[in-house]
Image 1 (cartoon, rainbow, N blue to C red):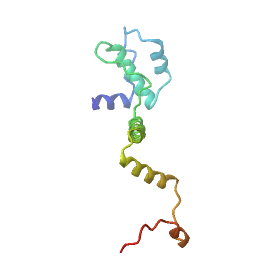
Image 2: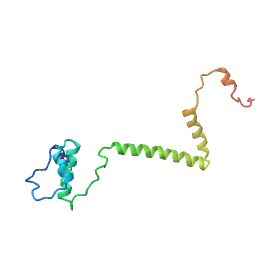
Image 3: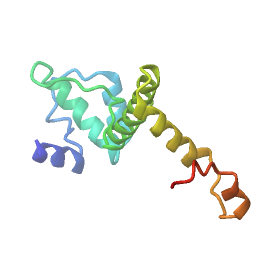
Length: 131
């Protein structure tokens, strides 16, 4: 498969002699006449092969993501959604750890850090003195 991908990315496989007697659709002919380069060349060669070997090659949608960026983005979105659902379920079922996690998350995202002033320390509840 790698060799075929390399072959179709280098140059057009179309020649009038090679495709003599094959009725090509107008969109493939127009693509070939536009002297495609790069991704368009690969698309032309794939469309030619898909048309000639229509019973043997599965037609791929044109809009298919060719890079892994789409996959990485999908995983990132799934992780964020999964985290939100996880916290929502913990909150819904009133899990004890949820209160701890939620308050830590709120402090991290929205809270202010103390600058260590003494008046801040005095407002803390010191509890009962130990004997």
